[in-house]
Length: 398
Image (tube, rainbow, N blue to C red; front, side, top):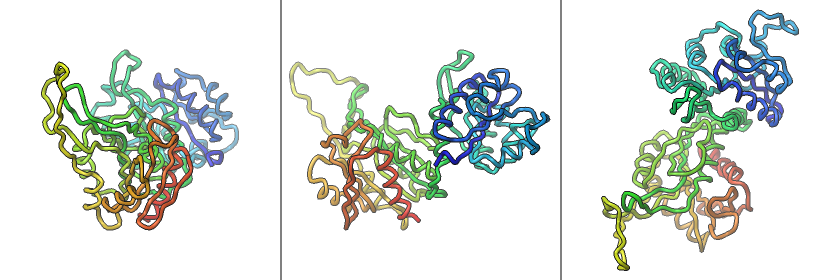
């Protein structure tokens, strides 16, 4: 329960500091207790009173101010925290944290805490891409810090590029994942595929399917929330990337195949929720295909490799494989045949003709199939399907 959890939010001196007020509001709505630590520069952008009003707790910023009660303030906050969030995190703060510098209240508290740390960078593109910043980020990651963002977009100085702080909703989602009480996938690597692929016919047209990627993204997000290191290989979708997840973008089935072959050796579980195209053009046209004055157009298609079957043939002992089957008839028979052919441990079958189980919806109606069992589930949110699936995966790779 998040209502038993405490977050210490560090706010540094960036223009995005005003967004941190919404982070406090969203966390409080989830029942989380929030304490705010501000740097002196952060107070130039937002007043402490704003955060005190929203959090219901006094804001801490001065190392040498007389405390309301006798305790070493930065040590007390470090111990209270179930999670430390820094948003926005400037290049200066990241450099100090990575190198163990503790010269103000915020850096001292972060250095003293044993809680997980979530960093939401915000800075100019040049500063983010600078080799020194990237080295500091790598050092912080290597010591266990988690990052959300930065995002690409218009920056405060008018530039366009990478460096914007992630939106408060995204940061709170990442924080909620780190606060999740069910951490049964800690230390495991989960490889997830999601979304459609696109097979080019000519420079402007392609073959694809109606997969939205929502199911795969839900699995990736919930796996990360349960402590897994997650790699998400995704086709083109219109969904925000899940927090705390490594995202690998692909377009064609061949590129999906290559990405899976690259990442599967270190995976403990491989969950194939993508919908790769079965066929591609044998010879894509180098120029746009023109109309033929009413004459039929014949396309020669070539079969793509069966990615899931290739994984099933190559997987190591103890490596779990879950596959999906979107069917329109004979759900159990077709699903079980696919399960066996792909050498999978578990197949998630759904009839896409049933309302609530099709494309571009937040729900699903699935049947969990093994070689010997079939468990039909009622309609439920894809997040809930993902958690039930991951319960099975956790047992397979325990």
